Length: 89
Image (cartoon, rainbow, N blue to C red; front, side):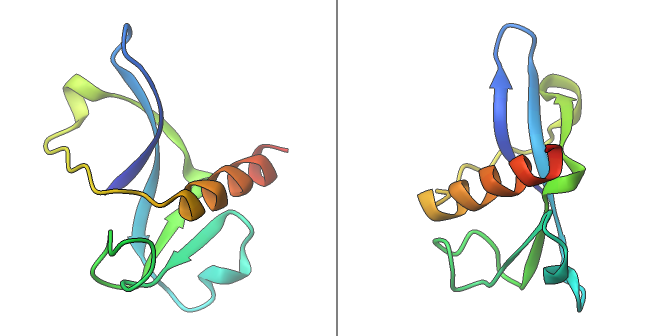
């Protein structure tokens, strides 16, 4: 799973940040955001880590098997933007 952070419709490419299972200590890294299931509109069912440092550009047509459009809160969007800024520099 991933969160789309930008898209380029003409090329079919999208930039995503992956979601992974939380591991103890993930919160120590500035490029990680830990999400609890009850936060941010319940977009996850377990404690999850957003790996902002692993941002990727992928071809939407070839790589996406299922697109779910849950609401990503403004607060989480801001946290992701801040983490991207810190990671990129």
